[in-house]
Length: 166
Image (cartoon, rainbow, N blue to C red; front, side, top):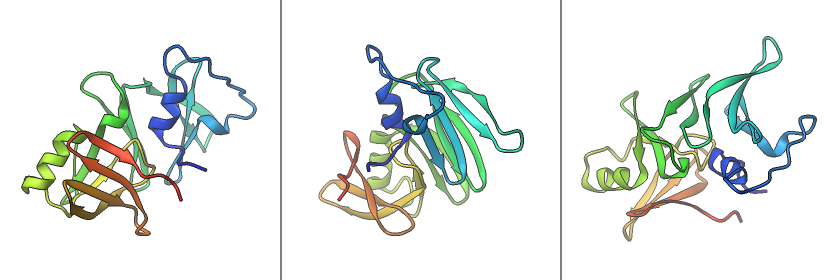
């Protein structure tokens, strides 16, 4: 099964699509962010957070293409995009325990390859569901891996590409 990332979920509800939403079986619209759960309601085009204390879904305050949903430590949150658009073109990064972004993936590529951003920085991309670190930088591309060392994303001048599962 492919990663059920924010970008993948939002793409299923792109304009012109006819998403099938069954509120009793919402698995294809669920996003697990390190213990926090989010649900994209395709008919409302709204993200919702699960409030475990009250066992209910609450509006997150953003629609598709408006923000990056992420976890930071044990907290879940959103980082609003400067303008609406495909979330897969953006990311957030943490360097020396400070959060930066959202930034365009192509800008991050430039900053990482020129040393403006440390290669020790970690990134959060809507194409994944966890923080990723630089695994290697070669041939004008940067590979990003999760904590288990599994490479999940490639970054080049054009932006991110998820690696095929397998």
